Image (cartoon, rainbow, N blue to C red):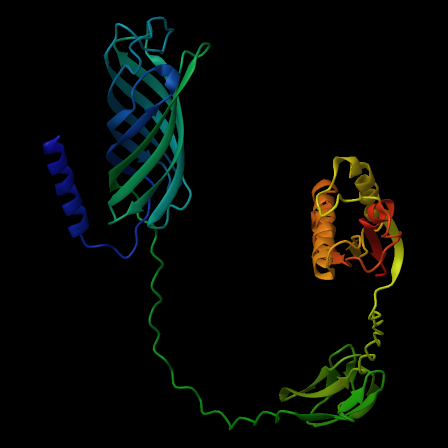
Amino acid sequence: MKAMYRAALMVAAFVFLLPLPARSEIRGGSIEVTPFGGYNWFQDKQNLKDRPVYGGRLGYNFTPHFGIEGTVEFIKTAVDDKGLTSFKEGQFGFPMDDVDLYFYHVDAVFHFMPEGRFNPFIVAGFGGAHYKPRVSDHDMAAFNVGVGAKYWLTDHIALRADLRDYMVTEIIQETYHNVAATVGVTFAFGGRERPVPARAERVEAKPEPVAAAPIPPPAAPTVRISAYPATIDQGKCAKLDWSSTGASSASIDQGIGSQNPNGSREVCPGSTTQYTITAMGDGGTRTNTTTVTVVPPPPPPAPVVVVKERPAVPVVIDRLVLHVNFDFDKSTVRPADVAELQKAIAFIKKYPANDVSIEGHTDSKGTDKYNQALSERRAAAVKAYLLKHAEIDSRKDTITTTGLGESKPIADNKTEKGRFENRRVEILILEK
């Protein structure tokens, strides 16, 4: 391997030290010799390990486009899965180990751009594959197709790269694909030179007769164009006015077309528009421009938004009195009042967009300050129950609680029954 590397370095040094020509090409009648190396990938079912490939090519170019070449390749590989004991022709397995593979084939080559330094090509051919140890009673047929390119470093030396698919087959049985990528150095010999264009004979110049003074060319035309008024309101019109000298005809863009060299016309553009006039004469053409600025109408006034002031005191549009009667000096919801609270859930769900106020009340026992705090706790207890059981957590900011203490009795506080009635909660639906 070290000797092979030294040889490759010597070839590379020889190639790159040579002077590069002005141009390179593939010549008809030339012979090409290409040593190469690369890597080969076997199809899995052939049961061989991917390994490097080495070989050489000998070719002949009938024309710059078309040639033919013979190739010999060698691959030293080994069986991949040694546990495979049952296999058919073209496959490898136990008791095989190391495998030597030789490809030999004849290929047709077509160059796409033979006249330049870079020559892409396609190639296809037929040959055989010889295996050692043998896996067939004869060498197997091998077709191949591929693409490649040559890059000429000098007139006779090029770098070459190939990508091939080798299809090894028993014709009527199994076909195995081997893909190989190779690079090499091509040495070209002989070939026909392309004809060089004949050099024109030098003719002594004869003194030309003195010509008469040339007639001066006609003067270039002049042209001007203006608009009046230059600024108009949308829907109004303006007048274009133009004149020229030395012109035989004129044309204005924006769909106006051919006009006399001097004239005027009315235009009514829907938006700001630039008009260009072109004057033509024997001395050439000249152009000029003018712009009509269109002022759009003012936008309509913004609609007046009337904001309806909400009354200082909320308007109650519906009310539900709950007989959620708390025990004396308590703010805890009793199990016996759950049915009443279910009515409250259905009630507030009828008004999903309205604010809700929950009022707590007490009887007259106790001080005003104490009863006020107790009523607030009772209203808060009902709100907490509704948020938990009505699944309306998104409305928690629209539900308020108020404690009114003993200020609004609905029964006589002098009797036990009346005081029990006054320990209650009311739910109010407020106007939007």
